[in-house]
Amino acid sequence: MRKISKKRVSVFGIFLVISYLALSALSVGLAILAEGDNKGHFVLLQLPIVFQHAALMELGLLKYLEGMSWPEAYIYLGLPMVAFLYLVGWIVEIIGNKNNSKN
Image (cartoon, rainbow, N blue to C red; front, side, top):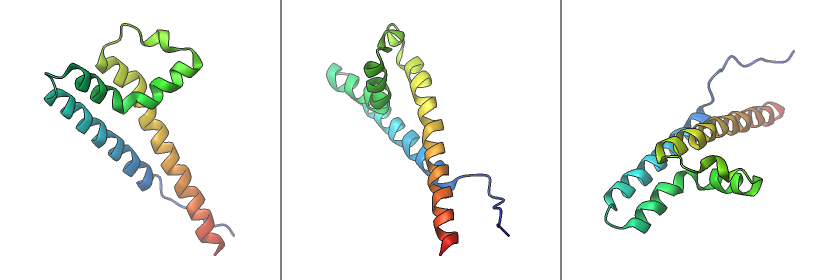
């Protein structure tokens, strides 16, 4: 008989999400400190959402970001990333549990 796990929260998924949010907060904090350096300020604000931005560019959907403020861009691009990272962590745990149960 197959053993069903009662675990509902992915610890690894939460770890990935907290890591992403902590690095994003650090990047935004450093951007605030670099207020006098416009290029540094822009680069540091862009770091947490650069991969999502690149994906939108490849798909030709960059026009939807035009005119958005940084907080809006973080909401529209960062929140799906949080969900994606949690999902990745959850899948990794499921695969790991299957491999452990075979041994």
